[in-house]
Length: 360
Image 1: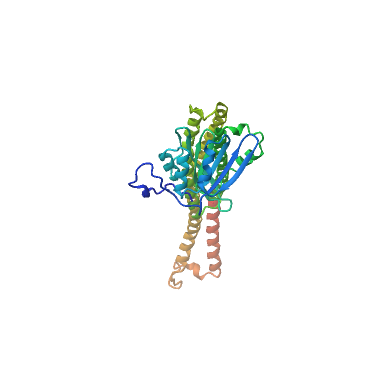
Image 2: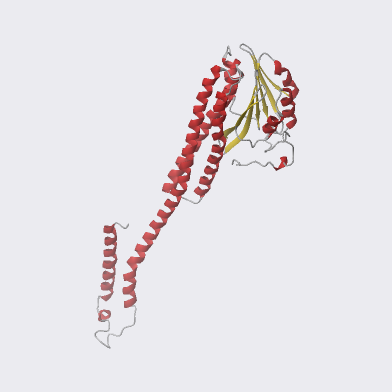
């Protein structure tokens, strides 16, 4: 289950720019991977020390540095100092409760967005913050844990030769953002199937356990809306950014990415309306089911009211020898059969009357 809020009390009283990790530690050790390439060659490596990333700062090649794990703030501080990041930017990287945003720094662009995934077995929504730092010849990505949706981007870099398009780091940053947005569609597809199956179950056989599912879906959609709505401003602002880091040929791809974000937002809003209606469907289904039960019980009780009256009358103590008007039917040889015949006639007549009225 995703959490809508992060605890930031540990930052109370600290000066702005203090790099303090806010969030849940999701990996035991920080993992640092590097992909360095030019048009022809590509090098991939995993390094133990953050200092091994420093030589790539002024390299003529394009470098993608990926950091998995934010709990070790010394890694963020050392890398940020070497690549000229503002202390407030380093603070935002360590704070996993950031709202998606775009900031332009001195020689770099800072982007924050959320990566959403659905667990394949449990269908639980997982979220982590991804921070991107885009420079003239590098892209640095910071993630909360190992594992991401960037494998398709890595494969494209490995298999594309010559890598003319990827020689612009802004296109690499676009590709990473595009992979995250594309995964939003996969998440929404799973959620859409869950909503449809739940809606069908609510109509046919509603049960109290459905309320928990409705509540969980509402929480997840609220979180998705919170994570995706600001992304529209981020992508739009990046496309309009007047910076030499963003090249003209990349802006067309950013416009396409903006349209995808709008499509995701529309789908999220549609699903929110559908989930809001699921509670009404549940209450209506439960009410209709209760009405059906009450109708059957009422009909049964109504049929037995006159029969109970007859049984009550004939259950009284009478003496036929005292008077001819003192229940003479009790002395008839077929009085018992006449009583049951009258009871069946009344009950059957009422049943046919109710059926003709369409009451059941």
